[in-house]
Image (cartoon, rainbow, N blue to C red):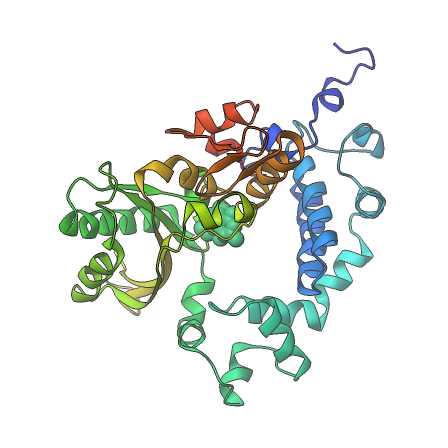
Length: 363
Ligand code: DCP
Ligand code: MG
């Protein structure tokens, strides 16, 4: 019982990494609307605006009950004027005109369809949109130049649009485990991303691979992909090599969200369990990442997400602690040194944060 009788408002912290955000919450009717505006801002290359809407949505996800009036929002952080206007309209009229017109707009729909293609980012999609293209079919029809990744993206578009279930992720986990252990016994494999946070569906399946003996993980990825190829399990793969060097990339680059691990972007050919289905397999996006053992805790934290949670962790580290956090390391600018960690718990402790388990990082 706080003085103003509203304990939740008093307790809401302003960084998402200071809060527990469960997967299921009470305010999807508001957060979905704010996230459409966030997405649209991203399509228009307005990162600041996009993050502001996403932070506002995230605060509502952490509330222990449904928002019923503007009074419920008193003292909550991260809710700017624009977000408040949108929320007010939804509470009063059931929907927001701005959100609905965005949702229906030709640009929003085309950008969603085009960036939904594996290998297509906002910049490429925007260029195509301005050339009058609206969908993957338009790309094929007009014979657009596509790179190898985008060709696979268009080829498997329908399958890759379908959500991947936890059951399918588990089948893929078994396959990846078999592949990794065939080429490097003793290696450790961990399911990452949305599935580690408890999601029941995802847009892809993410894995982190390491070996307790530092150095054994070097050159591992090509061995894994070759094994998978031989088994006929890969429809597409592109491996980028590990380019992380502590001396060069450390403090200067640590705030960047792009990590430099050996990484494989792939499309798996997954056999369907029910043979009665029209085709016997489907395409599934799978990301494999190999980390040296000494960086495994940082990689685990960096690859669990959510994207906003990661962003907020890095912002907290920089602004509040004068540290740089990446998926490789934590650098303390005051002491001029790297802080070593074997577990995620140790990293939260260095950052002066209460440990938040993966299932509550759904910011
Ligand atoms: N990640 C990140 N920044 C990026 C890319 C990835 O912080 N630019 C981290 C956070 C993500 C994780 O990697 O949670 C996996 O990325 P995904 O895009 O696969 O996101 P999720 O697994 O969280 O969601 P989905 O269910 O859509 O796959
Ligand atoms: Mg994922």
